Image 1 (cartoon, rainbow, N blue to C red):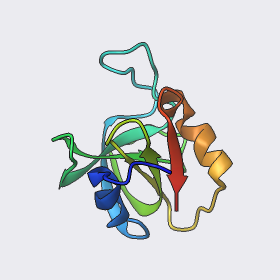
Image 2 (cartoon, one colour):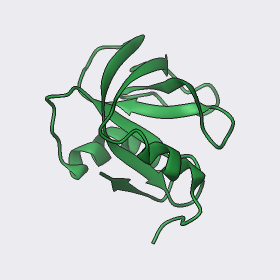
Image 3 (tube, helix red, strand yellow):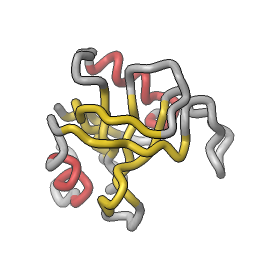
Length: 120
């Protein structure tokens, strides 16, 4: 199951369990530039890491209710999209452990539009 030729997943797996700095271009509470959607968690990218779509590698940050500019955390999961090659890192504070169901709830505002699975 899944996209066996996913370049995005191969890239994302390199970061699983590692510390990264996420820069937020769509902080919590911001509106999506094209769609009628509000970001309910901080969403951004890993600077200098080019994803297969030509943009920098995307990341969700779970673990705060504050709007952030940037933060360092641990990549604890990957949202692997089955219908496009644009996987997302799920970054959290080192000491935070949450279930797949809680991750799903946090990213649902955007991921509900895509077939996906959570990879740990």
